[in-house]
Length: 95
Image: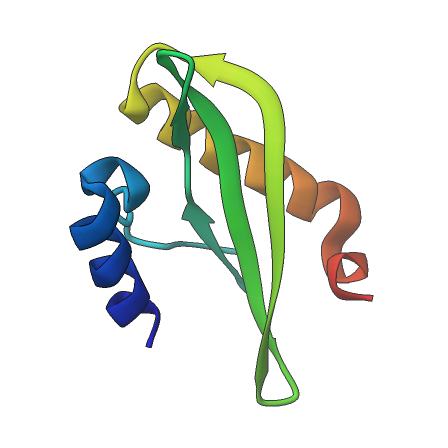
C-alpha cells in the first residue's frame, strides 16, 4: 500500500516527493530505515526505528537538526543517530 502512495506522489510531484528508499539496517533487534530528505540544498537527518512487539510492528520516527551536503552522508549519520537513540532509550521508544 505504501508503495502505491509513493508511486502516486512521484507521478504527481516528481521524484523529489518520493526519495529512494534505503535498505533497512538491523541493530540489536531493531530495524533502522534512514529517511533523509532534501531541505534548502542540504539533506536533513531523519529515519525510522522499528521493532516487532507482540506480532505488531511499532515505529519511532525521528528528525534531527543536522544537515549534510550529500544524501550518502545524511544516510550514514541517520543510521548512527538511530543507533544512539536505541542505545539510550531502548524499549522506551514504544511506550
